[in-house]
Every structure is written in structure tokens, then in C-alpha cells.
Amino acid sequence: MAFKPRIVFSLWLLLMCVLSCAGQEPVDLSAFQPQSALTDMEFVSVSAYRGPGNTDTRSNKELPILLWWSANLFPHFPGDTERVDCAHSSCLVTQNRKVQLQRRTASIIFYGTDFRAYEAPLPRLPHQTWALFHEESPMNNYLLSHGSGIRLFNYTATFRRESDYPLTLQWLPSLDYLLQSPSVSLEEKNRWRTAGLAPVLYMQSHCDVPSDRDRYVQELMKYLQVDSYGKCLNNKPLPEYLEDTSTATGEDRRFMSFVARYKFHLALENGLCPDYMTEKLWRPIHQGCVPIYRGSSSVADWLPNDHSAILIDDFASPQELAKLIMDLDKDDSKYLHYLEYKSPDKITNLRLLEGLQNREWGINDMSKPNYLNGFECFVCDRENERLAAAKKHRREPEKYPAPLPKMANNTHMGCPLPSPGYGAVEEIDLNDGWLQMWPQDYWQSLDQAEGLVSLIHHNESDPGLLWQHIPRMAVSRNGQ
Ligand SMILES: *[C@@H]1O[C@H](CO)[C@@H](O)[C@H](O)[C@H]1NC(C)=O
Ligand SMILES: *[C@@H]1O[C@H](CO)[C@@H](O)[C@H](O)[C@H]1NC(C)=O
Ligand SMILES: *[C@@H]1O[C@H](CO)[C@@H](O)[C@H](O)[C@H]1NC(C)=O
Image (cartoon, rainbow, N blue to C red; front, side, top):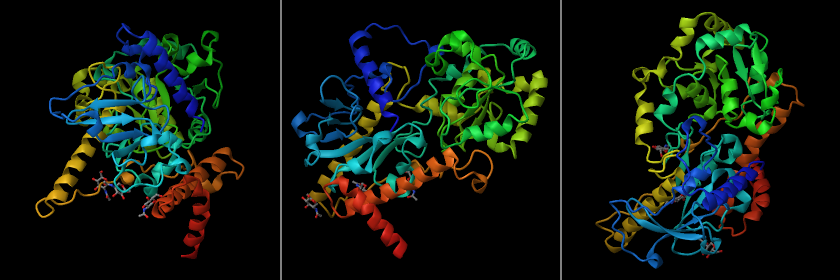
């Protein structure tokens, strides 16, 4: 997939950082750059931390092994094997695939974006659990959005709150990030309006995504002035000093102040899924611009209060949405109502406050583990619990019941079939790029999930046999 280079690049950054980041200055939050699980800063904080509840005295040879299956994700450096001392217990973690079939290997950890049915570790051994780390967009792997795909995993860390180790607020570094006063005052924004800027900014260079956002924005543009600087629906050139696309998509300071002059930002995620929220939502809120949002259907559950964003799905049509925006554009006090959350007492959403308070991982916070190491320890502690319970059960089956199996289900991911950003699917031209790509990708992913289930069911050792199992399954499905 097209996403691999990013991981490789991030790792390269990590490498550079390990070599040169010692003594780095504290991170400036206004230049916060969330990327993926692999930002260089997060790795620097990796250290063996023994929680107060960890009384594990076993030697390395006695510890259960966790195997990181996805190449390039192993959150330790250097070497390929490490002991981790977690809050309650210890494990040996490795990226050496030679341990795949060992008795001691208790769990295999996967990165969702890289998970491929035709590369899965087979045969699947009954004593081994599978753990899924997937913080990225649903579009990166629709296999995980099907029940048959997600149920292969026993533990998950995804953006959904129902996940075992939720990463829901991963793109929101802190409460202060929300509270920062608007970068550009309303008076100044109004002056820019008079000087010819549109009320609304659109800035996307990743077109043809599952959420089909451009189709919606294109319709909206019929009723409302939108300045679009990215490659998608472009109608305005970037000023020369920002033309360099690397700054246009990054968080360059000049770029940030350029976009902050707009009253509203179109903020449409590339894939739709409950609880999938990214910097597209939090960045305008940070800057004091009002997001016009579509992405997570349950986004209202996480917003600072009930008037801090405009939700596209609340409007019957782009035309009605345009009416509200034009109305707010003319009425300063109504507009400022949407920025009330900038004073702390107006952040009334307890779920948001508690979510930020209670998460054990940090973003650019050296005092907390990053979520990759956090999840690794979560799996380690769960596996040690399970092994201890199984041992007790073997010794005294009457007294101790066998531990119950545990697996993920559709509430851990379950992103819907991609649908058109505007209008009905029947109205779309058969040659349309979106139509040819995303619904197909979604259903082919189901084939792959079911094919893998079949491989496991038949105790196959060669995942390459997937391509034989898929047609066989299709035949039996149609014969039903
Ligand atoms: C892990 O998940 C698999 C597949 O869903 C399931 O068969 C197995 O019982 C689970 N293992 C444990 C230890 O819960
Ligand atoms: C799905 O998983 C969640 C959380 O792990 C659990 O609470 C829920 O009961 C499960 N739902 C079903 C239908 O099994
Ligand atoms: C599955 O295959 C493995 C290795 O190919 C073998 O050791 C194991 O006994 C098989 N399990 C079953 C239930 O047939």
C-alpha cells in the first residue's frame, strides 16, 4: 500500500533522533505535529519502567514472549529483543520471527495498516493470542472493519472507545491545546473577508478517498464561497512563500498563520468511522477557527461543548449548511458563540475532560509512555494474567475455572461501507474513480478476512494458499 513509505520514513527519523535528539528542547505545542504512532519524540521516552505492582522476579528465560509481527514497528532500539517491565508483570518482546511457533510465544502483535491475510503467521496456534494496533484511518485496511476480520484478534488498540486500549483522543495533545486563544482575532478575520478572502477554507491534496469528501465540497461550493488551495477542487493558488507542498501539508508556522485567517475550515476526514477524529478536527479548534466537520458520526461526544463545531451531518443539504455559514459570517456575536470553549469554564464535556485526564499515554509528554509501548505492556499484563489463571486451572480444575476466551468484535472498528459524499450511489457514473475503487476495496477485504478464517480453520501453514481459499469460499457462499 501507499502508506508504507511513511513508516519507513518515520523510522528513519527515529534513527536520526536516537543519534541526535539527546538534550532536545521541550516540544512547542503550537507547532505540534501528530503523525502516527511513530513520531520520533515518542520513541525517545522509551525506558524500562517497572510499575509499583510489578513484583515479577522471573529471569528473561522464563518470561512469556510477545512477537511484533509487522516489520518496522518494534518500539525499542537498538536490537531486536528486549525485556519489558510493565505495571504488573514482565515479558520478553521481540521482532524476531523465529519464535513464531514457540510454546513460550504467548501473543503476536500486528500493525493494522500492514496486516495482510496472505502474510499472516500460520498455522495459528491455539495457545497464542493476536493483538492489533491500528490508530490510522479505516481506509488503510478495510479487512479490519469486517466482523470476520476483527474477530481474529484478541486485543485491540484502535481509535474506538470500545477498543481494549482506546486511542480515541490521539490527535489531541492536551487541554491547553484547545484553550489556546485564537491565533487571529475576529476583527482581523473580518478585515481579511473585506479584502476578498472567502469565509471558508478547504485544503486537501489527497483526493479520491473513501469518504468522497470532494463530492460534498463541490456541491457546497455552488452556494458558498470557499477558497480551496490544495490539489483537490483547487480554485486559488497558494502564496509563493507557501508553494512548497511540504510546508503546505505540514504545520509550518507561516502556513498555520495563513490558514488561521479563515473563519471556518472544512474538516472532512478521509474515512468515516465512529470515533475516528484527527488533526482535521482539533487543529482548527486549537487555532480558533470553526470546523465544518464530517468524519466520526459520534464526534459530538468528544467536543468541548455543544457549540464548538458545525457538523455536516446535521444539515439536510449543502445548501442549508451554506445558509448557516453565511448567517454566522454576518453576525459576529453568533460566530463568537462557537469559540466560547476558549474559556475553561465553557468546556463542559466531562467525557472529553476525563478522557484527557485518564489516558495513561501521553503525546509529546516525556513523563508518560507513548501508546505503542503502552499497548505492548497492556498485552503483556493481560497475557501474564491469562497464563497464571490457566496454570491454576490445570492444578486445581475444580477450584479454578478455565480462563474465558476473549476476542474483539465489530465495536472495536466496524467502519461502514464507503458511500458517496453527496447524492445516491445509483446516480454516480460507472467510470467514477471513487466508485471503482472504494466499495470494491471494502468487499475484497471481506473476501480476504473470510479467506484467512478459512485458512486458520483448515490449520494451513502457508498463508499464500489464501488465493485458493477465497474462490472456494465464494463457491460455497453462492451454493448456500
Ligand atoms: C483468541 O481469538 C481466537 C480467534 O477469535 C479465539 O479462537 C481464541 O479462543 C482466543 N484466545 C483467547 C485466549 O481468548
Ligand atoms: C464486543 O466487545 C465489547 C468490548 O470488548 C463487549 O463489551 C461487548 O459485549 C462485545 N459485543 C458482542 C456483541 O459480543
Ligand atoms: C496444525 O498444524 C501444525 C503444524 O503444521 C501441527 O503441528 C498441528 O498438530 C496441527 N493442528 C491440528 C489441530 O491439526
